[in-house]
Image (cartoon, rainbow, N blue to C red; front, side, top):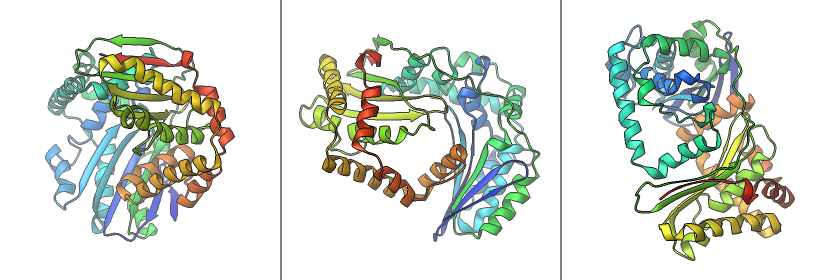
Length: 405
Protein backbone atom coordinates (compact mmCIF):
# COMPACT_ATOMS: atom_id res chain seq x y z
CA UNK A 1 0.00 0.00 0.00
CA UNK A 2 1.44 3.35 -1.09
CA UNK A 3 0.41 6.84 -0.01
CA UNK A 4 1.22 9.96 -2.00
CA UNK A 5 1.04 13.69 -1.36
CA UNK A 6 1.95 16.92 -3.14
CA UNK A 7 3.42 19.91 -1.33
CA UNK A 8 2.50 23.41 -2.51
CA UNK A 9 5.99 23.97 -3.90
CA UNK A 10 5.72 20.96 -6.20
CA UNK A 11 7.68 18.42 -4.17
CA UNK A 12 6.02 15.00 -4.29
CA UNK A 13 5.93 12.49 -1.44
CA UNK A 14 5.49 8.72 -1.60
CA UNK A 15 5.35 6.45 1.43
CA UNK A 16 5.07 2.73 2.02
CA UNK A 17 4.06 1.56 5.47
CA UNK A 18 5.93 -1.48 6.82
CA UNK A 19 5.96 -3.13 10.22
CA UNK A 20 9.62 -2.69 11.04
CA UNK A 21 11.66 -0.95 13.71
CA UNK A 22 13.96 0.43 11.00
CA UNK A 23 12.83 3.16 8.61
CA UNK A 24 14.28 4.56 5.41
CA UNK A 25 13.74 8.01 3.98
CA UNK A 26 15.30 9.89 1.10
CA UNK A 27 14.91 12.38 -1.70
CA UNK A 28 15.46 11.87 -5.41
CA UNK A 29 16.12 14.90 -7.59
CA UNK A 30 15.68 14.65 -11.33
CA UNK A 31 19.08 16.24 -11.90
CA UNK A 32 22.29 14.51 -12.86
CA UNK A 33 25.40 14.90 -14.93
CA UNK A 34 23.47 15.19 -18.20
CA UNK A 35 22.10 18.49 -16.85
CA UNK A 36 25.55 20.06 -16.62
CA UNK A 37 26.67 22.66 -19.15
CA UNK A 38 29.84 21.77 -21.05
CA UNK A 39 31.92 23.92 -18.69
CA UNK A 40 30.27 22.30 -15.65
CA UNK A 41 31.50 18.74 -16.14
CA UNK A 42 31.63 17.08 -12.71
CA UNK A 43 29.77 19.80 -10.82
CA UNK A 44 26.67 17.66 -10.17
CA UNK A 45 28.79 15.07 -8.36
CA UNK A 46 30.82 17.73 -6.53
CA UNK A 47 27.57 19.38 -5.42
CA UNK A 48 26.29 16.08 -3.98
CA UNK A 49 29.52 15.72 -1.99
CA UNK A 50 29.36 19.32 -0.77
CA UNK A 51 25.82 18.97 0.58
CA UNK A 52 27.34 17.34 3.67
CA UNK A 53 30.00 19.99 4.29
CA UNK A 54 28.06 22.54 6.26
CA UNK A 55 24.72 24.36 6.34
CA UNK A 56 23.51 27.68 7.72
CA UNK A 57 23.11 26.05 11.13
CA UNK A 58 25.58 23.14 11.10
CA UNK A 59 29.26 22.59 10.46
CA UNK A 60 30.35 19.54 8.46
CA UNK A 61 31.03 17.50 11.60
CA UNK A 62 27.53 18.18 12.95
CA UNK A 63 25.92 17.23 9.63
CA UNK A 64 27.79 13.92 9.61
CA UNK A 65 27.08 13.27 13.30
CA UNK A 66 23.37 14.05 13.23
CA UNK A 67 22.31 10.53 12.17
CA UNK A 68 25.47 8.71 13.24
CA UNK A 69 24.86 9.74 16.87
CA UNK A 70 21.62 7.73 16.95
CA UNK A 71 22.95 4.73 15.02
CA UNK A 72 21.54 5.86 11.70
CA UNK A 73 23.23 5.95 8.32
CA UNK A 74 23.21 8.43 5.44
CA UNK A 75 24.17 7.86 1.84
CA UNK A 76 24.18 9.89 -1.37
CA UNK A 77 25.06 9.37 -5.01
CA UNK A 78 24.84 10.97 -8.43
CA UNK A 79 23.88 9.32 -11.71
CA UNK A 80 23.53 10.62 -15.25
CA UNK A 81 19.96 11.76 -14.54
CA UNK A 82 19.43 11.78 -10.75
CA UNK A 83 20.88 12.91 -7.45
CA UNK A 84 19.83 10.86 -4.42
CA UNK A 85 20.19 11.27 -0.68
CA UNK A 86 18.90 8.65 1.73
CA UNK A 87 18.93 7.82 5.43
CA UNK A 88 18.25 4.64 7.44
CA UNK A 89 17.33 4.93 11.11
CA UNK A 90 15.12 3.72 13.93
CA UNK A 91 11.50 4.82 13.51
CA UNK A 92 11.65 7.22 16.44
CA UNK A 93 14.10 9.43 14.51
CA UNK A 94 11.90 10.14 11.48
CA UNK A 95 11.67 13.87 12.13
CA UNK A 96 15.42 14.11 12.69
CA UNK A 97 16.11 12.48 9.31
CA UNK A 98 13.59 14.60 7.39
CA UNK A 99 14.86 17.82 8.95
CA UNK A 100 18.48 16.93 8.15
CA UNK A 101 17.80 15.98 4.51
CA UNK A 102 15.94 19.24 4.03
CA UNK A 103 18.76 21.17 5.69
CA UNK A 104 21.49 19.81 3.42
CA UNK A 105 19.42 20.25 0.25
CA UNK A 106 18.16 23.77 0.87
CA UNK A 107 20.51 25.34 3.41
CA UNK A 108 24.03 24.20 2.51
CA UNK A 109 26.62 27.01 2.37
CA UNK A 110 29.60 25.33 0.61
CA UNK A 111 32.57 26.72 2.56
CA UNK A 112 35.55 27.32 0.21
CA UNK A 113 37.93 25.42 2.50
CA UNK A 114 35.63 22.39 2.32
CA UNK A 115 35.47 22.65 -1.48
CA UNK A 116 39.28 22.50 -1.56
CA UNK A 117 39.31 19.34 0.52
CA UNK A 118 36.47 17.62 -1.35
CA UNK A 119 38.03 18.50 -4.68
CA UNK A 120 41.10 16.47 -3.70
CA UNK A 121 38.90 13.60 -2.52
CA UNK A 122 37.20 13.42 -5.92
CA UNK A 123 40.51 13.68 -7.79
CA UNK A 124 41.71 10.68 -5.75
CA UNK A 125 38.46 8.94 -6.69
CA UNK A 126 39.14 9.64 -10.37
CA UNK A 127 42.67 8.23 -10.07
CA UNK A 128 41.52 5.10 -8.24
CA UNK A 129 38.82 4.56 -10.87
CA UNK A 130 41.51 4.48 -13.56
CA UNK A 131 43.05 1.54 -11.70
CA UNK A 132 39.83 -0.47 -12.13
CA UNK A 133 39.38 -1.19 -15.86
CA UNK A 134 36.38 -3.47 -15.20
CA UNK A 135 34.58 -0.37 -13.85
CA UNK A 136 35.98 2.44 -15.97
CA UNK A 137 35.22 0.65 -19.24
CA UNK A 138 31.48 1.26 -18.73
CA UNK A 139 31.95 5.03 -18.52
CA UNK A 140 34.32 4.99 -21.48
CA UNK A 141 31.81 2.98 -23.49
CA UNK A 142 29.09 5.57 -22.92
CA UNK A 143 31.58 8.27 -23.90
CA UNK A 144 32.12 6.27 -27.09
CA UNK A 145 28.45 5.92 -28.05
CA UNK A 146 27.30 9.36 -26.82
CA UNK A 147 30.09 11.51 -28.27
CA UNK A 148 30.03 15.23 -27.46
CA UNK A 149 26.80 14.75 -25.49
CA UNK A 150 26.25 15.14 -21.72
CA UNK A 151 25.26 11.45 -21.42
CA UNK A 152 28.73 10.47 -22.56
CA UNK A 153 30.59 12.38 -19.87
CA UNK A 154 31.66 10.43 -16.82
CA UNK A 155 30.10 11.39 -13.50
CA UNK A 156 33.30 12.35 -11.67
CA UNK A 157 34.41 15.13 -14.00
CA UNK A 158 37.98 16.17 -14.78
CA UNK A 159 40.76 17.48 -12.57
CA UNK A 160 41.14 20.59 -14.75
CA UNK A 161 37.52 21.65 -14.34
CA UNK A 162 37.16 20.59 -10.71
CA UNK A 163 39.99 22.92 -9.75
CA UNK A 164 38.02 25.89 -11.12
CA UNK A 165 34.71 25.45 -9.29
CA UNK A 166 33.82 27.84 -6.47
CA UNK A 167 30.93 28.06 -4.03
CA UNK A 168 29.22 30.45 -6.46
CA UNK A 169 29.32 27.84 -9.26
CA UNK A 170 27.70 25.27 -6.96
CA UNK A 171 25.03 27.70 -5.74
CA UNK A 172 24.17 28.65 -9.32
CA UNK A 173 23.91 24.98 -10.31
CA UNK A 174 21.53 24.28 -7.43
CA UNK A 175 19.47 27.38 -8.14
CA UNK A 176 19.04 26.42 -11.79
CA UNK A 177 18.86 22.62 -11.62
CA UNK A 178 17.50 21.59 -8.18
CA UNK A 179 13.87 22.22 -9.10
CA UNK A 180 11.14 21.50 -6.57
CA UNK A 181 8.78 20.05 -9.18
CA UNK A 182 11.52 17.53 -9.99
CA UNK A 183 11.91 16.21 -6.44
CA UNK A 184 10.38 13.18 -4.75
CA UNK A 185 10.59 12.44 -1.03
CA UNK A 186 10.35 8.68 -0.54
CA UNK A 187 9.75 6.88 2.73
CA UNK A 188 9.44 3.29 3.95
CA UNK A 189 8.73 2.79 7.63
CA UNK A 190 6.33 2.40 10.50
CA UNK A 191 4.82 5.86 10.74
CA UNK A 192 1.32 7.23 10.23
CA UNK A 193 1.16 8.98 6.89
CA UNK A 194 -0.44 12.04 8.49
CA UNK A 195 2.56 12.45 10.78
CA UNK A 196 4.97 12.04 7.87
CA UNK A 197 3.11 14.76 5.97
CA UNK A 198 3.30 17.01 9.04
CA UNK A 199 7.09 16.65 9.14
CA UNK A 200 7.45 17.20 5.40
CA UNK A 201 5.21 20.29 5.48
CA UNK A 202 7.15 21.67 8.46
CA UNK A 203 10.55 21.38 6.76
CA UNK A 204 10.32 20.85 2.99
CA UNK A 205 7.04 22.70 2.61
CA UNK A 206 8.54 26.02 3.74
CA UNK A 207 10.91 26.20 0.76
CA UNK A 208 9.84 28.43 -2.16
CA UNK A 209 8.73 26.78 -5.39
CA UNK A 210 11.41 26.54 -8.06
CA UNK A 211 9.94 24.99 -11.19
CA UNK A 212 11.99 23.66 -14.07
CA UNK A 213 12.22 25.96 -17.09
CA UNK A 214 14.82 24.17 -19.20
CA UNK A 215 14.84 21.08 -21.41
CA UNK A 216 17.55 18.46 -21.59
CA UNK A 217 19.64 18.16 -24.73
CA UNK A 218 18.19 15.16 -26.53
CA UNK A 219 20.27 12.46 -28.19
CA UNK A 220 19.44 10.87 -31.53
CA UNK A 221 22.71 10.49 -33.47
CA UNK A 222 23.02 6.72 -33.27
CA UNK A 223 26.41 5.48 -34.45
CA UNK A 224 28.44 2.27 -34.46
CA UNK A 225 32.11 2.51 -33.54
CA UNK A 226 34.76 -0.01 -32.52
CA UNK A 227 37.76 0.95 -30.44
CA UNK A 228 40.64 -0.91 -28.81
CA UNK A 229 42.96 0.57 -26.19
CA UNK A 230 46.20 -0.94 -24.94
CA UNK A 231 46.04 -0.89 -21.14
CA UNK A 232 48.67 -3.51 -20.28
CA UNK A 233 46.15 -5.36 -18.13
CA UNK A 234 46.53 -9.02 -17.20
CA UNK A 235 43.28 -9.90 -18.97
CA UNK A 236 41.26 -8.21 -21.67
CA UNK A 237 38.11 -6.28 -20.81
CA UNK A 238 35.46 -6.15 -23.52
CA UNK A 239 32.16 -4.34 -23.77
CA UNK A 240 29.88 -4.49 -26.79
CA UNK A 241 26.47 -2.92 -27.14
CA UNK A 242 23.95 -0.84 -28.99
CA UNK A 243 21.30 1.79 -28.46
CA UNK A 244 18.06 0.74 -26.83
CA UNK A 245 14.72 2.04 -25.59
CA UNK A 246 14.11 5.03 -23.29
CA UNK A 247 12.28 4.39 -20.01
CA UNK A 248 8.84 5.30 -21.42
CA UNK A 249 8.98 2.77 -24.27
CA UNK A 250 6.65 -0.23 -23.89
CA UNK A 251 9.40 -2.51 -25.24
CA UNK A 252 11.62 -1.89 -22.23
CA UNK A 253 10.13 -4.82 -20.27
CA UNK A 254 10.84 -7.48 -22.94
CA UNK A 255 14.38 -6.10 -23.12
CA UNK A 256 14.78 -6.38 -19.33
CA UNK A 257 13.72 -10.04 -19.64
CA UNK A 258 16.24 -10.61 -22.43
CA UNK A 259 19.01 -8.90 -20.45
CA UNK A 260 18.33 -11.08 -17.42
CA UNK A 261 18.14 -14.22 -19.55
CA UNK A 262 21.44 -13.52 -21.31
CA UNK A 263 23.65 -12.52 -18.38
CA UNK A 264 21.72 -11.49 -15.33
CA UNK A 265 22.77 -12.44 -11.78
CA UNK A 266 21.69 -16.08 -12.14
CA UNK A 267 24.51 -18.59 -12.61
CA UNK A 268 22.52 -20.42 -15.28
CA UNK A 269 22.21 -17.40 -17.58
CA UNK A 270 22.87 -18.26 -21.21
CA UNK A 271 26.14 -16.40 -21.55
CA UNK A 272 27.48 -17.56 -18.19
CA UNK A 273 26.79 -21.14 -19.23
CA UNK A 274 28.34 -20.65 -22.66
CA UNK A 275 31.48 -18.73 -21.73
CA UNK A 276 32.20 -19.79 -18.17
CA UNK A 277 30.62 -23.14 -17.39
CA UNK A 278 31.09 -24.90 -20.74
CA UNK A 279 34.36 -23.37 -21.93
CA UNK A 280 35.98 -21.69 -18.93
CA UNK A 281 37.09 -18.63 -20.92
CA UNK A 282 35.49 -15.91 -18.80
CA UNK A 283 35.11 -15.49 -15.05
CA UNK A 284 32.86 -12.45 -15.20
CA UNK A 285 30.19 -11.73 -17.80
CA UNK A 286 27.17 -9.49 -17.47
CA UNK A 287 24.45 -7.91 -19.58
CA UNK A 288 23.06 -4.46 -18.82
CA UNK A 289 20.19 -2.35 -20.06
CA UNK A 290 20.19 1.32 -19.05
CA UNK A 291 17.14 3.35 -20.10
CA UNK A 292 17.34 7.15 -20.07
CA UNK A 293 14.72 9.82 -20.67
CA UNK A 294 15.14 9.88 -24.45
CA UNK A 295 17.49 7.02 -25.29
CA UNK A 296 19.04 3.96 -23.71
CA UNK A 297 21.74 1.40 -24.25
CA UNK A 298 22.11 -2.34 -24.02
CA UNK A 299 25.55 -3.81 -23.50
CA UNK A 300 27.39 -7.00 -22.64
CA UNK A 301 30.66 -6.98 -20.72
CA UNK A 302 33.13 -9.80 -20.22
CA UNK A 303 36.71 -10.27 -19.13
CA UNK A 304 38.88 -12.97 -20.66
CA UNK A 305 42.43 -13.86 -21.67
CA UNK A 306 43.55 -11.77 -24.62
CA UNK A 307 43.78 -14.76 -26.97
CA UNK A 308 40.09 -15.56 -26.30
CA UNK A 309 38.58 -12.19 -27.23
CA UNK A 310 37.41 -13.24 -30.70
CA UNK A 311 36.01 -16.58 -29.52
CA UNK A 312 34.14 -15.01 -26.60
CA UNK A 313 32.75 -12.27 -28.83
CA UNK A 314 31.53 -14.81 -31.39
CA UNK A 315 29.82 -16.81 -28.64
CA UNK A 316 28.04 -13.66 -27.44
CA UNK A 317 26.66 -12.93 -30.88
CA UNK A 318 25.73 -16.57 -31.36
CA UNK A 319 23.36 -16.24 -28.39
CA UNK A 320 22.00 -12.94 -29.71
CA UNK A 321 21.34 -14.50 -33.11
CA UNK A 322 19.58 -17.42 -31.45
CA UNK A 323 17.16 -15.01 -29.79
CA UNK A 324 16.46 -13.50 -33.20
CA UNK A 325 15.95 -16.74 -35.11
CA UNK A 326 14.35 -19.05 -32.57
CA UNK A 327 11.22 -18.01 -30.71
CA UNK A 328 11.19 -19.06 -27.07
CA UNK A 329 8.96 -21.98 -26.18
CA UNK A 330 6.31 -21.81 -23.43
CA UNK A 331 8.42 -23.67 -20.83
CA UNK A 332 11.53 -21.57 -21.43
CA UNK A 333 9.55 -18.33 -21.45
CA UNK A 334 7.81 -19.26 -18.21
CA UNK A 335 11.16 -20.06 -16.57
CA UNK A 336 12.61 -16.73 -17.75
CA UNK A 337 9.69 -14.81 -16.28
CA UNK A 338 9.80 -16.68 -12.97
CA UNK A 339 13.49 -15.94 -12.63
CA UNK A 340 13.03 -12.18 -13.06
CA UNK A 341 9.92 -12.14 -10.84
CA UNK A 342 11.83 -13.94 -8.11
CA UNK A 343 14.71 -11.49 -8.26
CA UNK A 344 12.32 -8.52 -8.07
CA UNK A 345 10.41 -10.08 -5.17
CA UNK A 346 13.60 -10.74 -3.21
CA UNK A 347 14.76 -7.18 -3.88
CA UNK A 348 11.46 -5.80 -2.64
CA UNK A 349 12.08 -7.46 0.73
CA UNK A 350 15.13 -5.23 1.25
CA UNK A 351 13.54 -1.93 2.20
CA UNK A 352 16.72 0.13 1.85
CA UNK A 353 17.02 -1.02 -1.78
CA UNK A 354 13.30 -0.68 -2.43
CA UNK A 355 13.27 2.94 -1.21
CA UNK A 356 15.08 4.55 -4.12
CA UNK A 357 13.55 2.18 -6.68
CA UNK A 358 10.11 3.24 -5.46
CA UNK A 359 11.07 6.90 -5.44
CA UNK A 360 12.60 6.83 -8.91
CA UNK A 361 9.57 5.08 -10.36
CA UNK A 362 7.30 7.73 -8.88
CA UNK A 363 9.62 10.48 -10.11
CA UNK A 364 9.53 9.19 -13.69
CA UNK A 365 5.99 7.87 -14.05
CA UNK A 366 4.14 9.77 -11.29
CA UNK A 367 2.65 6.45 -10.19
CA UNK A 368 3.83 3.25 -8.58
CA UNK A 369 3.08 -0.39 -9.25
CA UNK A 370 2.50 -2.95 -6.56
CA UNK A 371 4.51 -6.17 -6.72
CA UNK A 372 1.38 -7.97 -7.94
CA UNK A 373 0.96 -5.43 -10.76
CA UNK A 374 4.63 -5.77 -11.74
CA UNK A 375 4.32 -9.56 -11.83
CA UNK A 376 1.19 -9.29 -13.97
CA UNK A 377 3.01 -7.01 -16.41
CA UNK A 378 5.95 -9.41 -16.68
CA UNK A 379 3.60 -12.37 -17.15
CA UNK A 380 1.96 -10.57 -20.08
CA UNK A 381 5.17 -10.46 -22.16
CA UNK A 382 4.96 -12.85 -25.11
CA UNK A 383 7.59 -14.83 -27.00
CA UNK A 384 6.73 -12.78 -30.07
CA UNK A 385 7.54 -9.53 -28.24
CA UNK A 386 10.90 -10.91 -27.15
CA UNK A 387 11.66 -12.03 -30.70
CA UNK A 388 10.62 -8.64 -32.06
CA UNK A 389 12.93 -6.78 -29.69
CA UNK A 390 15.84 -9.12 -30.45
CA UNK A 391 15.41 -8.64 -34.19
CA UNK A 392 15.08 -4.91 -33.82
CA UNK A 393 18.19 -4.41 -31.69
CA UNK A 394 20.63 -7.26 -32.17
CA UNK A 395 22.17 -6.43 -35.53
CA UNK A 396 25.91 -7.02 -35.25
CA UNK A 397 26.85 -4.27 -37.69
CA UNK A 398 25.06 -1.75 -35.47
CA UNK A 399 26.90 -2.78 -32.29
CA UNK A 400 29.73 -0.67 -30.91
CA UNK A 401 32.60 -2.18 -28.96
CA UNK A 402 35.38 -1.11 -26.63
CA UNK A 403 38.30 -3.38 -25.75
CA UNK A 404 40.99 -2.90 -23.13
CA UNK A 405 43.92 -5.26 -23.67
